[in-house]
Image (cartoon, rainbow, N blue to C red; front, side):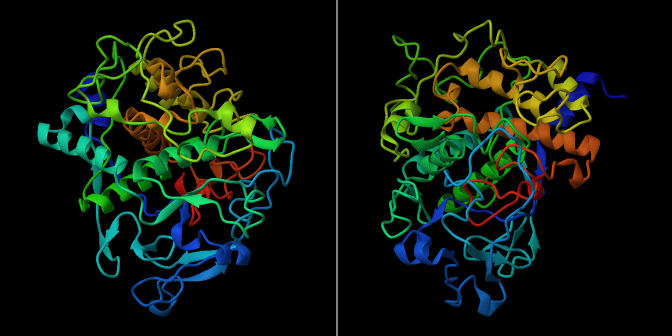
Length: 447
């Protein structure tokens, strides 16, 4: 019989299989970031293979009207028609590509995750692995891929630098190029940014990727897309994000120059100059400035990555999470409960996200557990929601959070109906499309 420790290591250290078969997406497809597409409210670019929109001539897909969910939302956002992300993506586009079979992408030009080949019929299986179980060459390749992504412009996607209103309802497009890594930083910012209400007024109690049922499915799409873009720019079709198993860690064991960057010898808030991450510039970290200017983050460099692990507020996060806390979280049978936000009790999602106590599952927003604990513990760029993806530890952390989600799904085997269909915070109902992905994925598709 396996020991308890052996079972635990078997569950996590072996990784987990990526068998999710939904398609990938990005932010605004370059092919749709123009006046014609915005005024027509249509994003159905041609597939290069046959020159037809969505590859229709080759039966890859077709252009269709989007179908928005009509289910009622929770009371957390008391406005309507003031935010471009409401009823995503209808403010920008109401027609997009619907891909058939195993095809995917904004123009149906790629294969769904888990498939390859000319007709996307060959099944593939990839496994995420513990970063400390990679060989030296595998680990070095991962770090090199990160740096390549930071220095490679995205070919397919651009970011919006203004709201639809600031774009004069589409007649004055405001987009700019961005590198592959920062594209994901920007998407995380855009999904979690405050609502601009005009003047100096903002609404902060809104987040399309956190504090509600969509937290886990949203970040699952985010990681899968991130992997796909790395695969594309490197040509390494087998690339997967490694994870950091932080259970019972006494300190940030990945915070060394061999891995994600050590501590600067004279400034504890900076990374060691021996790590190339020390030269990285962050974006989208100055939310108060954007709010005061009524502007979106435009991906301008804002300084180096900040990180001071362990020197955080101990009254809020005294230590890194334990194995027992993760196991208690996995034992919870309800995915979501009550108001379906950070006040939810006995909710697996809220406990894993870290707003509920990982020993009781009772909401306690004065403390930060599990997922949130890691962000707070890093005491720097990772600790601010909108800009947290600037620190590359983000992807290691969320790959492990996703593995806990996967373990819960396999243990409890919930029906799709377990994911709430109505009355969740804005953007988080089962049939809502995830912000800001184009083409479109509903929350429930990744549950």
